[in-house]
Amino acid sequence: MSTAAPPSTEAPSDAFGTPLVDVSALIPSDGRVLVKDETRYASGSHKEPAARAVVARAVADGHRHVTIATCGNYGRAMATACQAAGVECTVVLPSGWSDGGEAMRAAGARVLLVDGSYEDAVDESRRLAARGDRVDGNVDGPYAEAVFEGHGVVVSALRAALPEPPAAIWLPVGNGTTVIGVRRRLELLRWDTVVNGVGSAGNNPMVTCWPGPYRPLPPQSVTTTDHNQPLVNWHALQGDEAMTAIAATGGTVLGADDRELCEARDALTEFGAFPTAAGAVALAGLLRTARSEGLAPGTHVVVLSGR
Image (tube, rainbow, N blue to C red):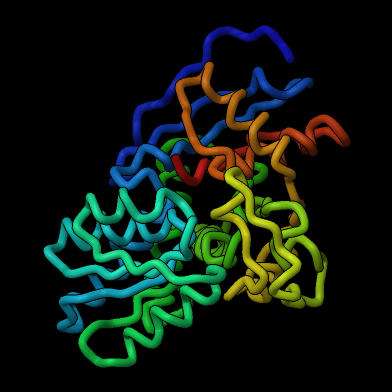
């Protein structure tokens, strides 16, 4: 690791105020690496702009109650967005995951714990929405386009902060929604930025079947730990489209194990960034690539996703 000067943090440039932090000292060669610290949102999740976009669309359509499923991040984001808008929120969470829903309850959400996986929680949230007294706010639900628009906010922020497009952007992969939203905004700006996705090694079908074709994993094949929890899916709801988006930019999908997640998380403390291990997954992927084959020239932006 090089001994560079203390990192500098640029002034927040997007509507929600999350900073860019220079962490180039973490890579073993010359190059510029910036982290976009999306954990600084009130909810602690990079999914907050997407949740706010969903709530705004739901309210415009006359709805006053949103229900979703979550591994943790989207639930905290949606609870925060609903509270700000004065809208009821129900979150379905697998038992034993995240903090058991404590942060979501603190933001005013009702939390329903279900046995099983994230996919089981999605099924239950859809059953609740089908009753007609609330609307489905899941990432592949009727407001999927709003989700993508919200995830594109980070690219608009980068345009305001950087003098030129970054060479690459490194993103977490779960359902694939962040990738799709970012890729769409890049296309709108006509930026030729490479999109790379990083997930939990062996625990996400985008990771295991890259470069394709997309195939879900057997439900019992994934392993959830305290460190990888928000990243584990046996079926990525928008995985096929996300893989196509990444391939179109010349990017790749790779997996990071728990050791790499924790290493990336711990490395960020000296830079004033404090994501969870899962929240540092995109940096874990960049660090592995930097050490094994080096990074392409130019600025690389890493999105931190949760604290």
